[in-house]
Image (cartoon, rainbow, N blue to C red):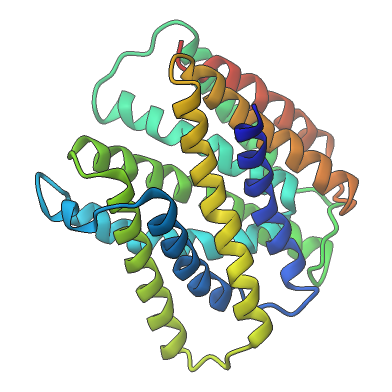
Length: 287
């Protein structure tokens, strides 16, 4: 169980770092670049991938390229969402992105909706609408509550869509037969180059503090993935436990941290959305 707890803590830790970025004047873009360099280093040391294996078999290079662009983009958007809408709603929106692959399976790949899955999909959609609900009482580090509600809703929606599409791309990559660790390194490398190129074009003024924070971000980001994989390996006969505990754990811990430590104010609809999100995950996890 400690593997899952570490993974959950690291996932929420990323959101906490994003939440503190504005307070400590951290440039998220610079942190994201170093994050990928750190993640690649840890991936090579711990997973010992063979990047050349990606060149063999039926590797979908368009998927790798898409991931290379989407990973840093959605990372930056997640930072904006946490800043504008808070940890609670952002983490919940990210976890509800599991709905996107399910909807794609039904409407694109023609899979049937049976049993609890249909109820789970319906409940997840309602939960998302509740989370996107604007709250006049919301307060964050932004300029004003009104600014927060208007922009926060948009960032939350993009987080939901972005992580959902990334999930689909990773599933497509696994179906193509590419080695996961090798694909992860290649995707991280492309993402790092894309982010660095964008910063250079913006003529970014580099900050030592932001670059150092990227190391912490990379450790948290990779540890979240690494310990989640280890948990699946450890509980190989019970993947349902890992799936449900991870998603519900992140939403629950994110709520405790966001509302408890950062005093994020939620409307009653947002609170209902959190409860429905947990309920929908219980209905949607594989049986």
